[in-house]
Image (cartoon, rainbow, N blue to C red; front, side, top):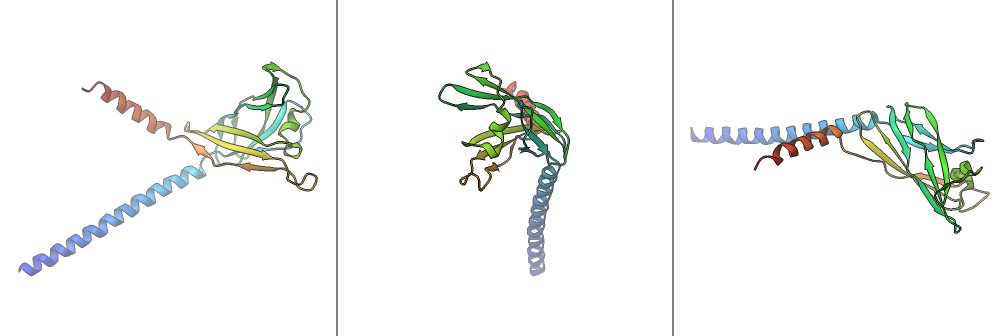
Length: 194
């Protein structure tokens, strides 16, 4: 009789261990599924460099993602030219729907004064790059998460033979805004608790 109880206990313990690993694996699968769904349902903004006769347009931003991007902006770019500092400020784009693109308009400043130049478009056109440029594109998704993508435009190592190189860095994003607001709510709730 005692042997039967031990056998049952061992079988139950073994079953419990198997159920634990099964539940852990199922939870990991659920987390990965949610992550993959979020990745496929977010916007992805990339720069497209094409010549444009209007000098105030710097380049196009194209949404190659599967949802709309909101509050699309490019961080200001500054370049020291020896005679002073040139700054380029980019006008934000309200939204870009999936598979669409919009021009980004730039205003050039020389030592904090607006400066008209016919070369604004050429400054950011990779074919004419003479020095390395670093830009950061930022945008929001439908749920309010903010993403940023660094862009590097490098001059060609072999001018006239190869075009300049444009490379995108890793996409970084903020946490879920609802999670942050819930965390803030809990923190506020317990700040009154002694």
